[in-house]
Length: 314
Image (cartoon, rainbow, N blue to C red; front, side, top):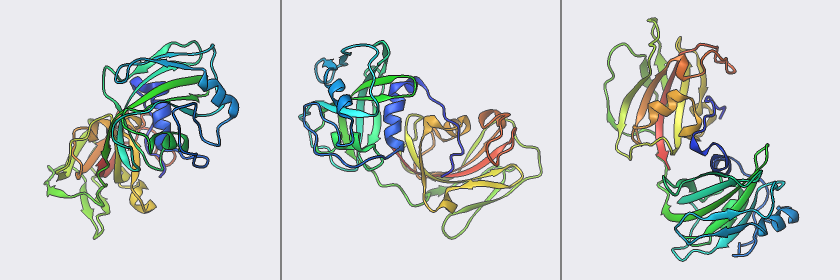
């Protein structure tokens, strides 16, 4: 899809978001051989990068925050390289499972700590073909408790991360369309009409646009409540306040998937707290959208309207 959102990053702005977020968004190269507990990488990895990562020391008991010691600084690699440090002892990780991963990261520039999740919430990723092949092959077939070490350049240097899988659950399949109890919206909002397949259209208003965020459920789903740290699968259509459509996953033929921390604030604020299965009407004022910046077919200062079906969240 054409991204209708602007990137925002929170605590994980450095290596945590870069590496785990990157793995959700891209696929490159061929599959690797089965990983081993030694210095392992895919066949696409540069041997010099493999050798460099083998010299990085990881210390600490399983389940506790590890210490990463770099052999020298600055520490650099030319591309993502992965090594399995310790095998787990839990259940085998299988294709398609949702993994909870505790992470800690250091800067390759000087070895300083960039952040960790051991004192907060584990990262969530899905072990499927949306992962970068190196990470996918280092996880699938291993066991819960496995620790992987990986390094990746970010344009300014190299970030080095340890990820420890603490839980693996079967992924709940995404819904095909919003489903639940219909909600009658209050007066004063654009009217939403659905065709036989569930694709929305709107009847715009001539009234002045609201200046505060509107997040109105049209269908109340019965699934789990969405949190800001999740990755959502949605169908959506977006319009300007005058009813001009500028984007739609319905037209592209498949739902969109994105991290809720990587979208315009109106989406983050409007969808967090909703439930899976819900259909939500968002009216987003400029300060929670693109502000005074134009974005492709969206003029500067635009109030945006979205109808979003929340099909899944991990």
